[in-house]
Amino acid sequence: MKRFSLWVLVSMVPLLLLSNVSADEINAAEAETYTVLNRDGQEITIDARFDDWRFARDVLVMGKDTWEPFQGGTWKNAEDLTVRLQIVWDTENLYFALRVTDDEYLAEGGNPWSNDGIQMAIDVSGGEIPPGLTGSTHLYNFSIKDGWQMENGNFKGEAEIVMERDDALGQSLFEWRMPAEIMADKGTVFEAGMEIAFAIIVNDSDKDAPGQTGWVGWGSHTIVFGKNPEEMKTLILSDQTLTVEPRSKLTTLWGRIKR
Ligand SMILES: [Ca+2]
Ligand SMILES: [Ca+2]
Ligand SMILES: [Ca+2]
Image 1 (cartoon, rainbow, N blue to C red):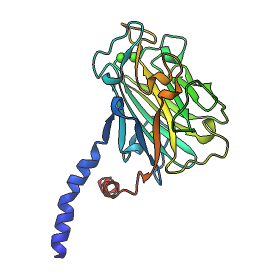
Image 2 (cartoon, helix red, strand yellow):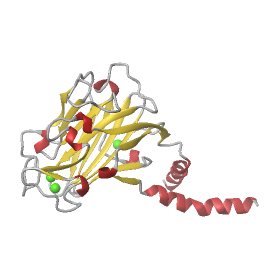
Image 3 (spheres, rainbow, N blue to C red):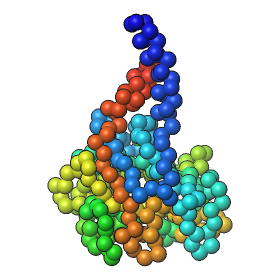
Image 4 (cartoon, rainbow, N blue to C red):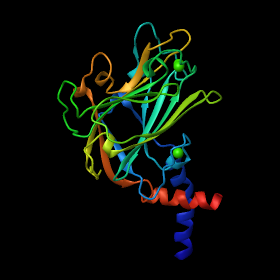
């Protein structure tokens, strides 16, 4: 009996590993919410390397279905512009891993949005955000060339961010940590069950259409075609963690053995 149980367990391991190798991809065009896992004991190092995200589950994918052209840009294929976003939380911070597949890195403009840059909105009041930009909706713009800029909000504190272009991969890589006080009242503690309103766009500047000529995103019209916070999507802070889930435990063990 004992031997049988062991055999069953051993034979299941490859299946469990396979099921955890590729994270669950979510088409941003069809998603209203994103489940943010707690990082628990998993340290997230802000270095634009993503091995520390290997247990993260859901990946929000922004591609053709969310593309909007602007001033002459076109979406050619997945290599032209496809964005993968993952987010985790702890009581004091939100952490973001953003990988932008973009065939050409072009940063010849004067602002983040015209330099393959990112624009993001966060409102911790959550739920239905009313129309019209108020102090509770925080806007940020950033790009490899221009660095991190805060456009709207009552900011106390700084983000930690690393941005890198990898031409061999054809990707621009962004990893950042946002402490609560740069988007919420000082002393705010994140907890499971909280809902945070969120939107992001990733602009693409390429040689055939330089500048802000189109983007993919999630809740994009929060940020472009006017500022419309009522278009924001929802992050749900989950009590699920990066390390406690049984599947991840098995993978952790396997990872240790492999090394
Ligand atoms: Ca990292
Ligand atoms: Ca491109
Ligand atoms: Ca580009």
